[in-house]
Image (cartoon, rainbow over the protein chains, first blue to last red):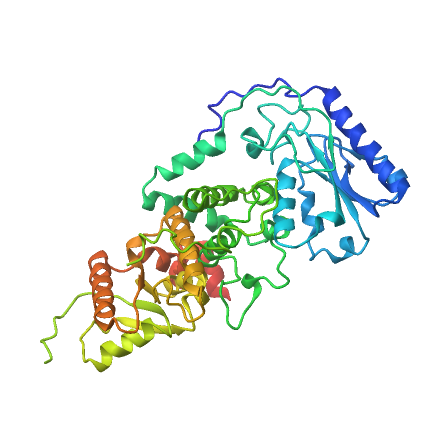
Length: 315
Length: 167
């Protein structure tokens, strides 16, 4: 897709007042919870050292909680810190978490997979206007040009099933669904063209495994792809092993992925990983009418079955 | 009984991932009944189709298989009650993924072959072998496997050749 040909609007999607009011609401609630001793820590964001950045933090005192913010730079999916694999965070006790819509979907997934219990977490949901994309110019406000691709077609701006909702959503214009367009473009290609497309992308992969580290659902203690004897996936960053890794990754996330697109954001080689995840989500919706949502579901599409499932592809 | 062998230019490698309770027994029956089928197939036995991880299929392709046959018990006949039901969903999803990445799905065949269906096993193997023979060798994965492998043959620039020779 020719990105230079497209004209992006530079008008801010939400005014300053929205961001400050959300930050205020988070701070107020976090301070209250910590002062009352209702939680041992609040997983949220604080401002980064450079302007226009933010970083995750576990605020353990009311003073630290006063530093919490919410801005378009709060891109991280904080649900990552609540899996059983993050032992040092979980050891603190009951936690509160600041969660955007996409983080909530991941949280719902983790609750469904028994990674955490609902009573062990206090969820501060955010009525989220969107966050910056991976290469956004952060001197600009959140606008058509800087918003992340996933946020353009977000369906979970208004959180549900949370303990508190911070902020009220401003009126947002409908944005062009770039990712859906790209997916449709790929689907319309011939298999050879698609193979060439992915071959080019996967060949660039340096196997830093940032996509795995950032994913809330990649919580296995030992990853299949790290194992040797027997080895399932070649570990060297060569095209063959890379292709296998990305196929296996997409397969293991099929029916679980919450669509936060963090894998795509952290990829240093700009591989459009969320396309794979979205494709799988779309197929599972068609096949088994399953959709990752904000409410935890006990079984995913690949962990349950029906006796009359489609088997037209089996002879 | 033996028919004259036809010489082919290309003999495809077919890997069959089968469950021990049904398809393996079915293949056994085909053998004991002295049925003829192409010797291109390499059978790998698993306890159940539920044990067949999609990564096995991928690895078969990567390590040189031109076609893969996955076969197990008919739905409802699983020795472990529901293994093939779970496998069915997993394979349906995996097929879609492979298709999206651009793999030719006619090289991948799923089937249910029970212990009594020696004839169906022969039919499956023959059909897949002939189909893959028509398609020719699977070049995509092979090229991928060879890409960026360190050998003098792939050094394209004089600088690289020089550096390689200096090692």
